[in-house]
View 1 (cartoon, rainbow, N blue to C red):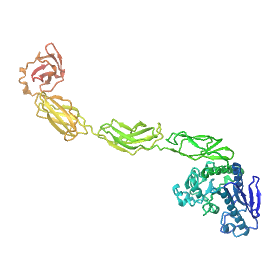
View 2 (tube, rainbow, N blue to C red; view 1 turned 60 degrees about the vertical axis):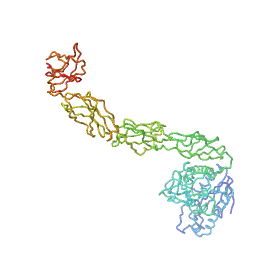
View 3 (cartoon, rainbow, N blue to C red; view 1 turned 30 degrees about the vertical axis):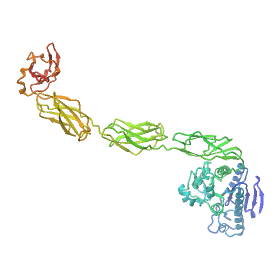
Amino acid sequence: MLVGCLQSHSQIIYGANNYTEYHKGTLPIIISVPHGGSLTPSTIPDRTCNNPTLVTDGYTISLARQIDSSLFNLTGKHPHIIYCNLKRTKIDCNREIIEGACGNAEATQAWNEFHNFIDTAEAIAQNQFPGKAFYIDLHGHGHTIQQLELGYLYSSTQLGYSDSVLSTSYYTNLSSIKNLVAANANGYTNAQMLRGNFAFGTLLANAGFPSVPSLQTPSPGTNPYFDGGFNTANYTCHATGNPVNGVQIECNSNVRSSYVNRKVFADSLASVLFRYFLIHENLNLSGCVIPTPIISANGPTTFCPGNSVTLTSSNSNSYLWNTGATTQSILVLTAGTYSITVSNAPACYASSAPVNTTVSICATPTNISSTVISGTSATINWTGNSCAYQYRIQYRKQGTTTWIETIITAPSVFKTLTGLTANSTYEYQIRTDCNSAGTSFSSYSAVQTFITICICAKPSNIATGNISQTSVTVTWTGNSCAYQYRLQYRKQGTSAWTTKTILAPTVSKTLTGLTANSVYEYRMRTDCNSSGSINSGFTTATTFTTLLRLEDTENIFESSMTVTPNPCNTCEIIGSENSSDLIITDILGRKLNATFTKSSSGFYINVPESNRGILLIRNIMTGEVVKFVKE
């Protein structure tokens, strides 16, 4: 076994024939490269046992050397690295020895040396950093999708399970990082460590290298995927008694194919590993002392849609948020987990504890009810939302299709709807608008209903018709709430009313047995129940006059009133003090549209020209009647 030194002072231990080599490090990171070798000694035949895979993971040794350089540049320290320099046609150091060496003595020795180096490296790292050693088995894949495949010993199917399933103890115990799950600084679950905001794959993806699993790509789905092999299963905590956490990294060709690409990836991987240890192990790989940054917020970290909070780090020389921002403060508009890594000197970093922000839900109003319902109005009440800018009520009469909309500015949590139709069912629903434009809003509440009460209104449009000497027909416009109508009438000058009850929906009544040539008063009301205890009250009394019978004209000349001249064109009535007591009828008793003008002796009679002939003038107070002829 030979010992050497790299220019950067990493000690190198070589196996027999330089088939393997171990670069001793001082970081808690162990990297093995089993499939990148190129040596093909003739003393080791090509492998044929167990249908072997013989493809070399191209440029993985070069990539590992670049990772070593990047970590040294960042931290001033080296990782432990174990290389197999034999080509994969001769040996496979990621298989059990029987399959990996196919029984060849030289290959068997090289296989043992490779794995002994891993054991040695892990023992040293574990001794220096108890419980914090991290193993990486570095590979290259040829799959079409250009992404890093991170193997934690879960199949594609298992990675398709929900976070809650993957975080059960059964699936956690299958993981190659189960010890880190149990002891990470932030108490993250197994699913969070696999594909949460600060998972290894998420940090790599945030650095520009798509990875699976990660927050961005939680599972490979049906795409090809390497989930971890012999080395990952045996040199991590998946193996009983091994405290080391670890992962298999299958690198896509784009990160390996050129020096520039390898350097860019190696620098990013070094930074991600540095941050990963800070976040989950609370370990600064550079060993420098820097205060842990503290994030402060200028307001509540739970806020309403459209609002924000500013997060600010404590002072340092440089800042790097997990969002990629490099300012001391960031404006946060969305829910998420935010942390910052700060530096005050080269390779001297510290990361903050994460801060979670929550955007409140623009929630649908609750406890919705309708109260104070009348015939034409109803009040809608609800429990509001702290994020509400306004509330939007829609309502309509049941059976119609068009909503009527009204807006109520928060914090008001009630609205009286007016102009409704009595005795009608209305549908209504309500939503929360969390901004003035109504572009951030909740769903509408379930449709609810209320029924306006019946208004016990007085009959309207009351009229008389078909008047004769002894009868009259009264008509009116009814009310949808009516049970019945009461019609009262009496001869003018008397005190007792005669009452007729008409059941709804009938809206007419003929009164009979009346006295001819008489003025009657009448009035109506609506009863909204059978007893009449709920009623509209009576209308104002009005009058009608029954027709005059011909035989009633026999004594007209006994009147104290006279018409002069008679016949007349300009007719004057003498003997009556009040024109309001006088009515003009034709010989059949039909009332005419006549007016009276005061004269020196009485009143001039103004009768339309179309009513020429024998007319009667009657004093409704005395009952006197005078016949005259209008020329």
